[in-house]
Length: 156
Image (cartoon, rainbow, N blue to C red; front, side, top):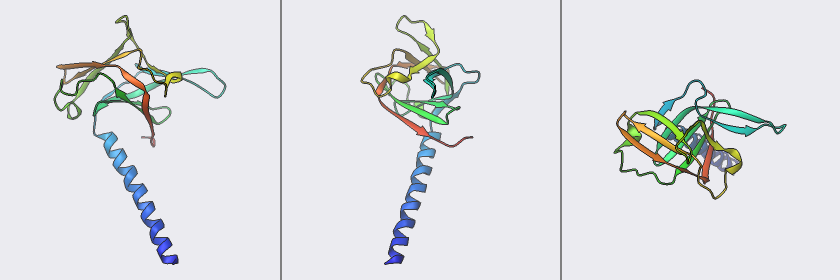
């Protein structure tokens, strides 16, 4: 009986390790762009209620989703793109993401990707994300605040 419990415990532990490895591998296989110098950010309230600017180190595009990696918090925010045409740029996940920029509803370029207060709300983003793939193919989309994930990961 004790041996069976140890075996079940070992199997659960192994499945958790493999699940984490598969998730990390999935996050690594995507078209990414490195952003030095805090070009894109989001504002998050700290424990005292102050607004703190958190920059994104990497922006990625994979399987119709936007990945924004917040280096300070070691988190990756994953949003579903709402009007993204996957057929516009063939095999975009395996190609190079060469530019990403944001515009507001007045077509003015902005740097704030999203507002934390809207996370989980049934609302689409105010900004449009414009992706350039291989310096040729350009696609744009808004994203949904409602269905999102935050993947916590280890440091570098």
